Length: 355
Image (cartoon, rainbow, N blue to C red):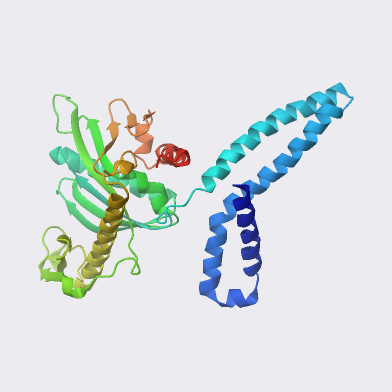
């Protein structure tokens, strides 16, 4: 581990020096690549430097505790040794985590898909609540949210919504949100006060880039048709809606939210590429693990991952046994209390070599 840390620190120093080189600054593509590399390893290097300085302090205090004649100074040094030993143990665990291979998708933007499941209109209303929760969390993180496609019930609910969320390390924060989200609450239309259980599915897909997926235009069937539903006269009276079918896989994507046919086509293609990338990554996962047991508890969207119990103001994440009694604040977008324990748990699992 320490040989690797020394190599990373040396690379960090080399990259930092290059970023001050006028010839590197003049080449913006190279400059940005080096700046990103430095940003990716700076936390590891900073922790390693604190670790090394703490080791030096530990040796100095051990020497004082063993050789100092003044009892008071000797006790102070002994107390400091205990504190430093605890600090160093924590730093070692942190360094091990930081040395774990990064998920190559962690820096990507995401396509967020929320669909109402069992529960009729109540499930659709919960889908609206979930999207608003993620939208508000995105605002806190200064991420950009762009709705790509939306199908509403007309009563405030959402049958399906697809949104692109762009910003710093979006996928790394939200990748564990994929799965079935269950809600338990009394619907507004329920006169007897009986608690209903409904569900929505959430899918978090890393955004596909052009270099990831190559699509042969001959594999596409593109249908242009008149859009329907809310949107105003301009939307409903022109042939602006686009439906793209990828014939080799049978994937179908439709977009009709924009008045422009070209904009709807561009959105549909972005969604199609992202779904094809997700299919390819799942295929690779299948090859590595025939049963896909490696996905259990990691946000696989077929799994019931979480329950939102409104009468008890309780959120339960079933994968890690997390129970929180601040559901109302979480629904306002304060997701850190959920996301941080999830990331910590899966990092610890990766460290054990179980994943």
